Length: 318
Image (tube, rainbow, N blue to C red):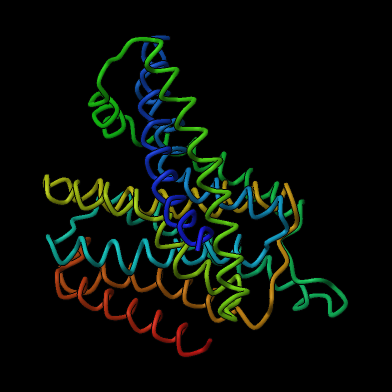
């Protein structure tokens, strides 16, 4: 019973830890006169994907590869189909041209690259299906390219978001940062331990737990941020947050996980990679069907139904 309790508490620590780490780090950076743009693209960007990163690093260190890749693939699918679908139902999502022609295709590229990297036997029958350390460095290099692109393109939006962080004393900021980091580490460890225990106890695979419970839990910051943005009328921020998170999750989090420990892959799980790729293709299609560069409410409903069908498929297949 204790492991289940710690599993739930781990999510609370993970989410609150990310919030505290962001608040403390942003306040420290602002006192050091670091430009809002740099703060937004580093501290805030890292912070919103901190739950996925914490869980994946711990899973990689413990060689729980199924959980590591399941968490990322499941989070990215949930980000688009569930979070963007829900946001679109609340309000039609208007998307900037730069997001349509660059950022969403970049997220699609990330999904395709994962599919290619985990299927080594397609080019060498004697190879092991895994994201190797070399692959991990390639993903991190592409993340650096994305950060450079974002620095050149997204100055105004980032500055506005960061400026809302309240000022606090240096001691309070440092304290929040340290406590937040500790929350991420402890919460991430409890989630990994709980997920592995649940998988063994109930006969589920680590990948299944990662694709469902863990991925949804670690996507809660994106859900809260995007829904809040939509309710304020800032629909572009909502979709930008999700797409940026998906790019971040694959290129940085999964790349770092592979550098720590190569992520092996079961070819039977390729269906989840196909869903991941198809999810981004569906989003691109939605932006050109109906109102151009907009995800309408009815399209949001379709996304939610697709996500429900996917989860039902996962449950039925266990």
